[in-house]
Image 1 (tube, rainbow, N blue to C red):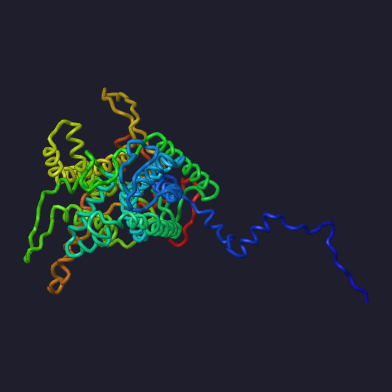
Image 2 (cartoon, rainbow, N blue to C red):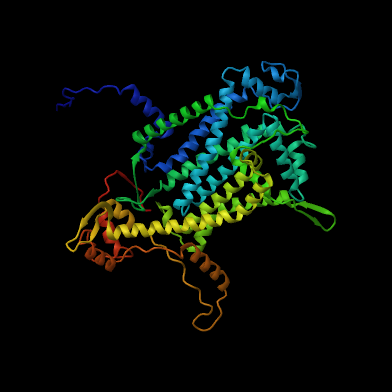
Length: 580
């Protein structure tokens, strides 16, 4: 018996390239090949999404510049006599923290630039987070399933304010020391625990000897570590929940339309990072901020004229200046300083609670338990948008109230007059802002409805046979028409019944009445989308210049056929989000 042997004909196996070997090495230990789906993750495009990116890039810049600053800053309240290159301060006794800040500004190569870049990046980051939160609020992206991510973002916002205040106070100059003095008064105004918190923070009677060292530990270790963890959690939730997007052709609750992570989004994000870095570097190199050498070291018996905090603390300063000097004496002779407790503790607490709890309040009022992945335009929720604008107006009134002395000097007015304007405006201006914003939103809804019925204005006039001049209206393009038709019209809850069918009183009547009234407040005024009869009348009036709806309603169940037809015209790539 003979045996046979099969051999390869004309082909020899070659060794894999080094890059493939390296990739296989890391994949066997990290599983990087399983990240293919993450690499193709889709990101929608809209200018408002860039606020979150600006905050993230500013955080990276803060970490890089903060590492440099920690190498030269000395967080000590021990006293020393300055003898450096800045002649006006020579021979003056000061803390080592202030002396090291001055030396960092004048004697360390690039030190002043890095200090100012760090400060500007902090201001830009807090501003970006504020705009990011407002974008989420006005578009309704905080709804299920993103309530936890909303709380994470709100927590980061609060921590950033504390972090900024701690970093602002570290140089121990006269301006930051004035801010610490105000913080000491706020802490002491807290009943029962205020004195204990004061001793823990300052390590003794003000100014104590430990506050700079403790703020330093909080500033470079505690809060940055928490922020880094929250940023990672925030991004993980973005990946898990998928990205929100505005309504448009091809965009549904089950997909995301946009560009993939690699290579498009990474290239854009990288370029945007360097734009933010470059712009902040340009500002830091040309615009002076926090010149501590002008203020001098902190002394408890001095205060700089026209002193102002950073902008994110301006509302607190304004509330303290505008509130009357009220005191409350409790039985037993215990005095509560209401002039500090209410504006500096209670008011910020109420404002923070309103921001943090809004998603849960809206879900409870409306009873909406659905998942929402499509964003609303602000005009589609007039009450929510008006409330948000009124909240911002309330903050701005207090913000300008914190500069009443500067405004009085610049405008030649009495500081008492400006204070009274702030006291009255804090009640009047938010109400006026609320009313005006709501009417604008409703007007924009009517305008969108009119565009659906009559088309867009072309600016071209024609003369009819009987002599009348009319403007020619052109139909909307199908993408714009789909966007306007896909708007969800929200309705308030039905009024609760005091008794059931058998005459038994409703045990939950009071709770249901509260929900009913709040739902009427939220959704009581809505402009409905056109019906089939209104479209028919509009076609007849416009000479059949509008696209026919084939007898379908523009809203409700029958309108889905029209929306599905229009949705087929989406041209961008989309990411299927599975069973959402």
